Length: 259
Image 1 (cartoon, rainbow, N blue to C red):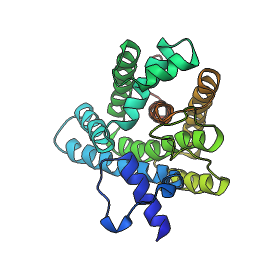
Image 2 (cartoon, rainbow, N blue to C red):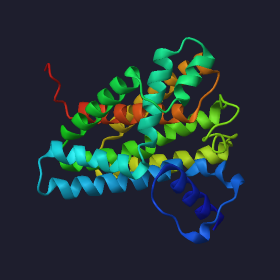
Image 3 (cartoon, rainbow, N blue to C red):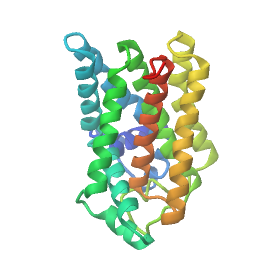
């Protein structure tokens, strides 16, 4: 029952979805809820995949991809997209640690953030539109939990950069067993896709490697510029890893521009 409570706490923190009243809330629960961050990704993937499947029945693939992406943004309240934009602004416009953190805390979106979010959403929607419907739905169920595992790895291995912040209660020390739960949850959809023949093991490994590479690259930047991470950094890692996974799955189709 306590594990179910922790899942609902994570669902409430990362999405707009309502949770049962009996769950309740204790501040200390939040720091243990990050283990279910990838499972929240499975819920978001189910919503996005459902919208894609329904839209694809009557609309072309590009519109289904846009509507699916819009649904995932709505259900999460643009939580991760906002973090991605703030990170672009902070790293692009700040020269010192203090200035980067100040920019990232500002609710206004600057040029770096606007350009970054437009490019990111453009690549995401285009990649999904290039996939056959079954592959696009499979990609959603792989990318959402796996990209959230990538973000969770920052909580596991790095320090929080601010003295206070919205994500700090969630970003307390994460144990190895908690990260193992997150990893199993994130990798299970991939195992199902491989077993069903929708994705080969080699391309699954490539997706994991792409997400890990994005995470490692951004983590090094965060450590060098911030000496840690913030909630915005979690969103940036999640978004970049998600896009990287879509690109790998598109590449698996073998339809390169230059044959």
